Image (tube, rainbow, N blue to C red; front, side):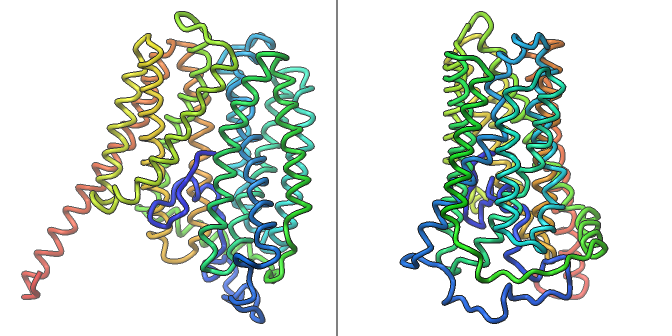
Length: 453
Protein backbone atom coordinates (compact mmCIF):
# COMPACT_ATOMS: atom_id res chain seq x y z
CA UNK A 1 0.00 0.00 0.00
CA UNK A 2 1.31 3.45 -0.83
CA UNK A 3 2.80 5.57 1.93
CA UNK A 4 0.73 8.29 3.48
CA UNK A 5 1.07 11.24 5.71
CA UNK A 6 0.05 10.83 9.32
CA UNK A 7 -1.16 14.38 9.62
CA UNK A 8 -4.83 15.14 9.30
CA UNK A 9 -4.10 17.82 6.75
CA UNK A 10 -2.68 15.40 4.23
CA UNK A 11 -4.26 12.15 5.15
CA UNK A 12 -2.75 10.04 2.34
CA UNK A 13 -2.20 6.27 2.47
CA UNK A 14 -2.86 6.62 6.14
CA UNK A 15 -6.42 6.75 5.20
CA UNK A 16 -5.82 3.37 3.59
CA UNK A 17 -4.56 2.18 6.90
CA UNK A 18 -7.09 4.17 8.89
CA UNK A 19 -10.01 3.57 6.62
CA UNK A 20 -11.92 1.77 9.29
CA UNK A 21 -10.59 3.93 12.05
CA UNK A 22 -12.88 4.12 15.01
CA UNK A 23 -11.03 6.82 16.88
CA UNK A 24 -14.09 9.02 16.71
CA UNK A 25 -16.41 6.89 18.75
CA UNK A 26 -19.37 9.10 17.91
CA UNK A 27 -19.07 7.84 14.34
CA UNK A 28 -19.69 4.25 15.38
CA UNK A 29 -22.56 2.55 13.55
CA UNK A 30 -24.01 1.52 16.91
CA UNK A 31 -25.75 4.63 18.30
CA UNK A 32 -26.04 3.04 21.74
CA UNK A 33 -22.29 2.77 22.27
CA UNK A 34 -20.71 4.97 24.90
CA UNK A 35 -18.53 7.65 23.24
CA UNK A 36 -15.59 6.61 25.43
CA UNK A 37 -13.98 3.28 24.50
CA UNK A 38 -13.89 2.46 28.19
CA UNK A 39 -15.77 4.71 30.61
CA UNK A 40 -13.41 3.75 33.43
CA UNK A 41 -10.22 4.67 31.58
CA UNK A 42 -8.55 8.03 31.24
CA UNK A 43 -6.01 9.43 28.81
CA UNK A 44 -3.34 9.39 31.52
CA UNK A 45 -3.61 5.59 31.76
CA UNK A 46 -2.87 5.05 28.09
CA UNK A 47 0.51 4.24 26.56
CA UNK A 48 2.97 7.02 25.82
CA UNK A 49 6.78 7.31 25.54
CA UNK A 50 8.27 5.88 28.72
CA UNK A 51 5.39 3.48 29.26
CA UNK A 52 6.71 -0.11 29.47
CA UNK A 53 4.47 -1.28 26.60
CA UNK A 54 4.80 1.72 24.28
CA UNK A 55 7.91 0.64 22.39
CA UNK A 56 6.65 -2.94 22.12
CA UNK A 57 3.36 -1.69 20.71
CA UNK A 58 5.05 0.48 18.07
CA UNK A 59 7.35 -2.32 16.96
CA UNK A 60 4.45 -4.78 16.85
CA UNK A 61 2.36 -2.60 14.59
CA UNK A 62 5.37 -1.81 12.41
CA UNK A 63 5.82 -5.52 11.77
CA UNK A 64 2.09 -5.92 11.08
CA UNK A 65 2.14 -3.10 8.54
CA UNK A 66 5.28 -4.48 6.91
CA UNK A 67 3.79 -7.96 6.54
CA UNK A 68 0.43 -6.68 5.30
CA UNK A 69 1.69 -4.72 2.35
CA UNK A 70 4.54 -7.06 1.47
CA UNK A 71 1.92 -9.79 1.08
CA UNK A 72 -0.74 -7.68 -0.62
CA UNK A 73 1.45 -6.76 -3.60
CA UNK A 74 3.82 -9.74 -3.51
CA UNK A 75 3.11 -10.86 -7.08
CA UNK A 76 3.23 -7.43 -8.74
CA UNK A 77 6.95 -7.37 -9.51
CA UNK A 78 6.80 -11.05 -10.56
CA UNK A 79 4.14 -10.81 -13.25
CA UNK A 80 6.48 -11.28 -16.25
CA UNK A 81 7.98 -14.39 -14.63
CA UNK A 82 4.52 -15.75 -13.76
CA UNK A 83 3.36 -15.17 -17.33
CA UNK A 84 6.37 -17.04 -18.74
CA UNK A 85 6.10 -19.98 -16.37
CA UNK A 86 2.32 -20.45 -16.51
CA UNK A 87 2.14 -19.45 -20.18
CA UNK A 88 -0.50 -16.79 -19.69
CA UNK A 89 -0.87 -13.25 -20.98
CA UNK A 90 -0.30 -10.09 -18.95
CA UNK A 91 -4.02 -9.40 -18.59
CA UNK A 92 -4.50 -12.87 -17.07
CA UNK A 93 -1.49 -12.82 -14.73
CA UNK A 94 -2.42 -9.34 -13.49
CA UNK A 95 -5.40 -10.85 -11.67
CA UNK A 96 -3.00 -12.28 -9.10
CA UNK A 97 -2.63 -8.66 -7.93
CA UNK A 98 -6.14 -7.40 -8.65
CA UNK A 99 -7.79 -10.33 -6.85
CA UNK A 100 -5.94 -9.53 -3.62
CA UNK A 101 -6.78 -5.83 -3.67
CA UNK A 102 -10.38 -6.56 -4.64
CA UNK A 103 -10.69 -9.02 -1.76
CA UNK A 104 -9.39 -6.38 0.64
CA UNK A 105 -11.83 -3.81 -0.75
CA UNK A 106 -14.80 -6.11 -0.19
CA UNK A 107 -13.78 -7.16 3.33
CA UNK A 108 -12.59 -3.92 4.92
CA UNK A 109 -16.01 -2.63 6.00
CA UNK A 110 -17.31 -5.96 7.42
CA UNK A 111 -14.07 -6.66 9.29
CA UNK A 112 -14.07 -3.12 10.64
CA UNK A 113 -17.49 -3.84 12.13
CA UNK A 114 -16.43 -7.23 13.51
CA UNK A 115 -13.49 -5.66 15.31
CA UNK A 116 -16.01 -3.72 17.38
CA UNK A 117 -17.38 -7.00 18.71
CA UNK A 118 -14.30 -9.22 19.01
CA UNK A 119 -11.54 -6.70 19.65
CA UNK A 120 -8.77 -5.07 17.63
CA UNK A 121 -5.96 -7.31 18.87
CA UNK A 122 -7.92 -10.49 18.16
CA UNK A 123 -8.93 -9.29 14.70
CA UNK A 124 -5.38 -8.35 13.73
CA UNK A 125 -3.99 -11.64 15.05
CA UNK A 126 -6.51 -13.79 13.19
CA UNK A 127 -6.18 -11.76 9.99
CA UNK A 128 -2.40 -11.91 9.95
CA UNK A 129 -2.34 -15.62 10.84
CA UNK A 130 -4.73 -16.53 8.01
CA UNK A 131 -2.89 -14.32 5.52
CA UNK A 132 0.49 -15.84 6.40
CA UNK A 133 -0.88 -19.39 6.20
CA UNK A 134 -2.16 -18.62 2.72
CA UNK A 135 1.18 -17.00 1.81
CA UNK A 136 2.91 -20.31 2.53
CA UNK A 137 0.44 -22.08 0.22
CA UNK A 138 0.53 -19.59 -2.65
CA UNK A 139 3.95 -20.74 -4.03
CA UNK A 140 2.47 -24.21 -4.57
CA UNK A 141 -0.51 -23.02 -6.66
CA UNK A 142 -0.64 -25.51 -9.56
CA UNK A 143 -2.12 -23.06 -12.05
CA UNK A 144 -3.27 -19.48 -12.47
CA UNK A 145 -6.80 -20.18 -11.25
CA UNK A 146 -5.55 -21.49 -7.92
CA UNK A 147 -3.10 -18.60 -7.64
CA UNK A 148 -5.84 -16.02 -8.18
CA UNK A 149 -8.23 -17.75 -5.78
CA UNK A 150 -5.69 -17.98 -2.98
CA UNK A 151 -4.69 -14.35 -3.50
CA UNK A 152 -8.33 -13.19 -3.32
CA UNK A 153 -8.85 -14.91 0.03
CA UNK A 154 -5.50 -13.59 1.23
CA UNK A 155 -6.51 -10.02 0.37
CA UNK A 156 -9.77 -10.42 2.27
CA UNK A 157 -7.87 -11.72 5.29
CA UNK A 158 -5.45 -8.78 5.19
CA UNK A 159 -8.37 -6.34 5.41
CA UNK A 160 -8.52 -7.02 9.13
CA UNK A 161 -5.19 -5.27 9.72
CA UNK A 162 -5.97 -1.73 8.55
CA UNK A 163 -9.52 -2.25 9.81
CA UNK A 164 -8.27 -2.62 13.38
CA UNK A 165 -4.80 -1.13 13.79
CA UNK A 166 -5.80 2.53 13.91
CA UNK A 167 -8.70 1.82 16.24
CA UNK A 168 -6.34 -0.06 18.58
CA UNK A 169 -3.97 2.90 18.59
CA UNK A 170 -6.73 5.44 19.26
CA UNK A 171 -7.93 3.41 22.25
CA UNK A 172 -4.62 2.38 23.81
CA UNK A 173 -2.25 5.30 23.13
CA UNK A 174 -2.23 8.70 24.83
CA UNK A 175 -3.55 11.36 22.41
CA UNK A 176 -0.27 13.31 22.51
CA UNK A 177 1.67 10.21 21.42
CA UNK A 178 -0.81 9.07 18.80
CA UNK A 179 0.77 10.71 15.75
CA UNK A 180 4.15 9.12 16.43
CA UNK A 181 2.58 5.70 16.94
CA UNK A 182 0.58 5.97 13.74
CA UNK A 183 3.68 7.14 11.90
CA UNK A 184 5.62 3.98 12.64
CA UNK A 185 2.69 1.76 11.63
CA UNK A 186 2.35 3.59 8.33
CA UNK A 187 6.11 3.38 7.84
CA UNK A 188 5.68 -0.36 8.09
CA UNK A 189 3.05 -0.14 5.33
CA UNK A 190 5.39 1.79 3.07
CA UNK A 191 8.46 -0.30 3.78
CA UNK A 192 6.48 -3.52 3.36
CA UNK A 193 4.97 -2.47 0.05
CA UNK A 194 8.36 -1.47 -1.33
CA UNK A 195 10.60 -4.14 0.21
CA UNK A 196 8.22 -6.96 -0.70
CA UNK A 197 8.46 -6.04 -4.37
CA UNK A 198 12.22 -5.61 -4.23
CA UNK A 199 12.75 -8.89 -2.34
CA UNK A 200 10.64 -10.87 -4.79
CA UNK A 201 12.48 -9.35 -7.74
CA UNK A 202 15.92 -10.32 -6.46
CA UNK A 203 14.95 -13.80 -5.28
CA UNK A 204 13.08 -14.54 -8.50
CA UNK A 205 16.19 -13.71 -10.51
CA UNK A 206 18.08 -16.49 -8.74
CA UNK A 207 15.46 -19.14 -7.93
CA UNK A 208 12.22 -18.27 -9.70
CA UNK A 209 8.91 -16.65 -8.80
CA UNK A 210 7.69 -19.44 -6.54
CA UNK A 211 10.77 -19.16 -4.37
CA UNK A 212 10.28 -15.39 -4.30
CA UNK A 213 6.72 -15.75 -3.00
CA UNK A 214 7.93 -18.28 -0.44
CA UNK A 215 10.55 -15.77 0.74
CA UNK A 216 7.86 -13.14 1.29
CA UNK A 217 5.76 -15.73 3.13
CA UNK A 218 8.65 -16.55 5.47
CA UNK A 219 9.31 -12.87 6.07
CA UNK A 220 5.62 -12.36 6.88
CA UNK A 221 5.67 -15.37 9.21
CA UNK A 222 8.53 -13.84 11.19
CA UNK A 223 6.67 -10.53 11.29
CA UNK A 224 3.50 -12.27 12.52
CA UNK A 225 5.42 -14.05 15.29
CA UNK A 226 7.02 -10.77 16.38
CA UNK A 227 3.66 -9.00 16.26
CA UNK A 228 1.99 -11.56 18.50
CA UNK A 229 4.88 -11.59 20.98
CA UNK A 230 5.21 -7.82 21.18
CA UNK A 231 1.70 -6.35 21.04
CA UNK A 232 0.39 -5.53 24.54
CA UNK A 233 -3.09 -6.68 25.45
CA UNK A 234 -5.85 -4.16 24.97
CA UNK A 235 -6.77 -2.47 28.25
CA UNK A 236 -9.24 0.16 27.04
CA UNK A 237 -11.43 -1.74 24.59
CA UNK A 238 -15.08 -2.39 25.43
CA UNK A 239 -16.83 -4.97 23.19
CA UNK A 240 -20.09 -3.85 21.66
CA UNK A 241 -22.62 -5.39 19.35
CA UNK A 242 -22.86 -3.73 15.96
CA UNK A 243 -26.23 -3.18 14.39
CA UNK A 244 -26.15 -4.15 10.69
CA UNK A 245 -29.16 -1.92 10.09
CA UNK A 246 -27.51 1.12 11.66
CA UNK A 247 -24.28 0.43 9.77
CA UNK A 248 -26.22 0.15 6.51
CA UNK A 249 -27.93 3.48 7.19
CA UNK A 250 -24.58 5.16 7.83
CA UNK A 251 -23.05 3.76 4.64
CA UNK A 252 -26.12 4.68 2.60
CA UNK A 253 -25.94 8.23 3.94
CA UNK A 254 -22.33 8.58 2.83
CA UNK A 255 -23.06 7.12 -0.59
CA UNK A 256 -25.87 9.64 -1.08
CA UNK A 257 -23.54 12.58 -0.34
CA UNK A 258 -22.43 14.03 -3.74
CA UNK A 259 -19.17 15.48 -2.41
CA UNK A 260 -18.11 12.23 -0.73
CA UNK A 261 -18.97 10.29 -3.88
CA UNK A 262 -16.80 12.65 -5.92
CA UNK A 263 -13.91 12.12 -3.51
CA UNK A 264 -14.37 8.34 -3.66
CA UNK A 265 -14.36 8.50 -7.46
CA UNK A 266 -11.22 10.66 -7.57
CA UNK A 267 -9.37 8.27 -5.26
CA UNK A 268 -10.44 5.28 -7.36
CA UNK A 269 -9.43 6.97 -10.64
CA UNK A 270 -5.98 7.99 -9.39
CA UNK A 271 -5.44 4.44 -8.13
CA UNK A 272 -6.61 3.07 -11.49
CA UNK A 273 -3.70 4.90 -13.11
CA UNK A 274 -1.21 3.88 -10.45
CA UNK A 275 -2.31 0.24 -10.32
CA UNK A 276 -2.28 -0.08 -14.09
CA UNK A 277 1.17 1.46 -14.54
CA UNK A 278 2.93 -0.55 -11.83
CA UNK A 279 1.21 -3.79 -12.79
CA UNK A 280 2.39 -3.53 -16.39
CA UNK A 281 5.74 -1.73 -16.12
CA UNK A 282 7.61 -4.98 -15.54
CA UNK A 283 6.40 -6.37 -18.87
CA UNK A 284 7.64 -3.29 -20.67
CA UNK A 285 11.06 -3.22 -19.03
CA UNK A 286 11.77 -6.93 -19.44
CA UNK A 287 11.16 -6.67 -23.20
CA UNK A 288 13.24 -4.93 -25.85
CA UNK A 289 14.65 -2.32 -26.15
CA UNK A 290 15.25 -2.43 -22.37
CA UNK A 291 15.72 -6.11 -21.50
CA UNK A 292 16.11 -5.56 -17.75
CA UNK A 293 16.52 -8.45 -15.32
CA UNK A 294 13.85 -9.37 -12.77
CA UNK A 295 16.01 -8.00 -9.94
CA UNK A 296 16.40 -4.61 -11.60
CA UNK A 297 12.68 -4.45 -12.30
CA UNK A 298 12.02 -5.13 -8.62
CA UNK A 299 14.38 -2.30 -7.71
CA UNK A 300 12.24 0.11 -9.75
CA UNK A 301 9.84 0.16 -6.82
CA UNK A 302 12.33 2.27 -4.87
CA UNK A 303 10.57 5.09 -6.71
CA UNK A 304 7.82 4.63 -4.14
CA UNK A 305 9.98 6.74 -1.83
CA UNK A 306 8.98 9.70 -4.00
CA UNK A 307 5.46 9.19 -2.68
CA UNK A 308 6.59 9.79 0.88
CA UNK A 309 7.91 13.22 -0.10
CA UNK A 310 4.91 13.99 -2.30
CA UNK A 311 2.32 13.08 0.31
CA UNK A 312 4.12 15.07 3.00
CA UNK A 313 4.21 18.14 0.72
CA UNK A 314 0.53 17.91 -0.17
CA UNK A 315 -0.57 19.51 3.10
CA UNK A 316 1.31 22.70 2.24
CA UNK A 317 0.07 22.52 -1.35
CA UNK A 318 -3.55 22.32 -0.19
CA UNK A 319 -2.90 25.21 2.18
CA UNK A 320 -1.68 27.40 -0.69
CA UNK A 321 -3.94 26.30 -3.56
CA UNK A 322 -6.91 24.67 -1.84
CA UNK A 323 -8.01 21.08 -2.32
CA UNK A 324 -9.10 21.53 -5.93
CA UNK A 325 -5.93 23.44 -6.79
CA UNK A 326 -3.84 20.58 -5.38
CA UNK A 327 -5.88 18.11 -7.44
CA UNK A 328 -5.19 20.10 -10.62
CA UNK A 329 -1.46 19.91 -9.87
CA UNK A 330 -1.74 16.17 -9.21
CA UNK A 331 -3.66 15.55 -12.44
CA UNK A 332 -1.16 17.57 -14.51
CA UNK A 333 1.85 15.86 -12.95
CA UNK A 334 0.42 12.38 -13.46
CA UNK A 335 -0.54 13.08 -17.08
CA UNK A 336 2.92 14.50 -17.82
CA UNK A 337 4.52 11.38 -16.36
CA UNK A 338 2.35 9.10 -18.48
CA UNK A 339 3.31 10.94 -21.67
CA UNK A 340 7.01 11.03 -20.76
CA UNK A 341 7.01 7.27 -20.15
CA UNK A 342 6.17 6.66 -23.82
CA UNK A 343 9.77 7.44 -24.82
CA UNK A 344 12.02 4.41 -25.40
CA UNK A 345 14.67 5.63 -22.99
CA UNK A 346 15.37 4.32 -19.50
CA UNK A 347 15.95 7.83 -18.05
CA UNK A 348 12.69 9.04 -19.63
CA UNK A 349 10.73 6.04 -18.34
CA UNK A 350 12.15 6.46 -14.83
CA UNK A 351 11.41 10.19 -14.87
CA UNK A 352 7.89 9.40 -16.04
CA UNK A 353 7.42 6.94 -13.18
CA UNK A 354 8.65 9.56 -10.71
CA UNK A 355 6.07 12.06 -11.98
CA UNK A 356 3.28 9.47 -12.02
CA UNK A 357 4.13 8.43 -8.47
CA UNK A 358 4.37 12.00 -7.18
CA UNK A 359 1.12 12.99 -8.88
CA UNK A 360 -0.73 9.93 -7.65
CA UNK A 361 0.28 10.41 -4.02
CA UNK A 362 -0.57 14.11 -4.13
CA UNK A 363 -4.02 13.41 -5.58
CA UNK A 364 -4.66 10.57 -3.18
CA UNK A 365 -3.58 12.70 -0.21
CA UNK A 366 -5.79 15.62 -1.22
CA UNK A 367 -8.86 13.45 -1.79
CA UNK A 368 -8.50 11.14 1.19
CA UNK A 369 -7.86 13.91 3.71
CA UNK A 370 -10.97 15.70 2.48
CA UNK A 371 -13.13 12.67 3.29
CA UNK A 372 -12.72 12.96 7.06
CA UNK A 373 -13.33 16.72 6.90
CA UNK A 374 -16.45 16.30 4.76
CA UNK A 375 -18.14 13.55 6.79
CA UNK A 376 -19.89 15.10 9.78
CA UNK A 377 -20.94 11.75 11.25
CA UNK A 378 -19.74 8.19 10.71
CA UNK A 379 -16.21 9.27 9.86
CA UNK A 380 -14.83 5.77 10.32
CA UNK A 381 -17.31 4.36 7.83
CA UNK A 382 -16.73 7.26 5.41
CA UNK A 383 -13.02 6.50 5.46
CA UNK A 384 -13.69 2.77 5.06
CA UNK A 385 -15.71 3.48 1.92
CA UNK A 386 -12.83 5.56 0.59
CA UNK A 387 -10.45 2.69 1.21
CA UNK A 388 -12.81 0.27 -0.51
CA UNK A 389 -13.08 2.51 -3.57
CA UNK A 390 -9.30 3.00 -3.54
CA UNK A 391 -8.62 -0.72 -3.71
CA UNK A 392 -11.35 -1.30 -6.25
CA UNK A 393 -9.52 1.28 -8.36
CA UNK A 394 -6.31 -0.69 -7.87
CA UNK A 395 -8.01 -3.91 -8.99
CA UNK A 396 -9.66 -2.31 -12.02
CA UNK A 397 -6.48 -0.46 -12.97
CA UNK A 398 -4.35 -3.58 -12.80
CA UNK A 399 -6.79 -5.57 -14.91
CA UNK A 400 -7.50 -2.85 -17.50
CA UNK A 401 -3.87 -1.75 -17.69
CA UNK A 402 -2.76 -5.31 -18.46
CA UNK A 403 -5.60 -5.80 -20.95
CA UNK A 404 -4.64 -2.57 -22.73
CA UNK A 405 -0.99 -3.63 -22.76
CA UNK A 406 -1.89 -6.99 -24.29
CA UNK A 407 -3.96 -5.25 -26.98
CA UNK A 408 -1.81 -2.22 -27.81
CA UNK A 409 1.44 -2.35 -25.85
CA UNK A 410 2.61 0.31 -23.43
CA UNK A 411 0.81 2.97 -25.44
CA UNK A 412 -2.47 1.23 -24.65
CA UNK A 413 -1.72 1.29 -20.92
CA UNK A 414 -0.81 4.98 -21.12
CA UNK A 415 -4.05 5.71 -22.99
CA UNK A 416 -6.03 3.92 -20.28
CA UNK A 417 -4.22 5.97 -17.64
CA UNK A 418 -4.90 9.24 -19.46
CA UNK A 419 -8.61 8.41 -19.63
CA UNK A 420 -8.67 7.74 -15.87
CA UNK A 421 -6.74 10.88 -14.97
CA UNK A 422 -8.97 12.81 -17.36
CA UNK A 423 -11.94 11.55 -15.39
CA UNK A 424 -10.40 12.86 -12.17
CA UNK A 425 -9.79 16.20 -13.91
CA UNK A 426 -13.41 16.35 -15.14
CA UNK A 427 -14.75 15.74 -11.63
CA UNK A 428 -12.50 18.47 -10.26
CA UNK A 429 -13.59 20.94 -12.95
CA UNK A 430 -17.23 20.17 -12.18
CA UNK A 431 -16.61 20.71 -8.47
CA UNK A 432 -14.85 24.01 -9.18
CA UNK A 433 -17.74 25.31 -11.27
CA UNK A 434 -20.26 24.15 -8.69
CA UNK A 435 -18.36 25.90 -5.89
CA UNK A 436 -18.18 29.14 -7.90
CA UNK A 437 -21.90 28.99 -8.65
CA UNK A 438 -22.66 28.46 -4.96
CA UNK A 439 -20.46 31.41 -4.00
CA UNK A 440 -22.20 33.65 -6.55
CA UNK A 441 -25.63 32.54 -5.29
CA UNK A 442 -24.60 33.19 -1.68
CA UNK A 443 -23.23 36.64 -2.59
CA UNK A 444 -26.48 37.49 -4.40
CA UNK A 445 -28.52 36.33 -1.40
CA UNK A 446 -26.45 38.45 0.97
CA UNK A 447 -26.78 41.47 -1.30
CA UNK A 448 -30.55 40.96 -1.48
CA UNK A 449 -30.97 40.93 2.31
CA UNK A 450 -28.35 43.63 2.86
CA UNK A 451 -25.81 41.45 4.68
CA UNK A 452 -22.15 42.54 4.15
CA UNK A 453 -20.07 40.02 2.20
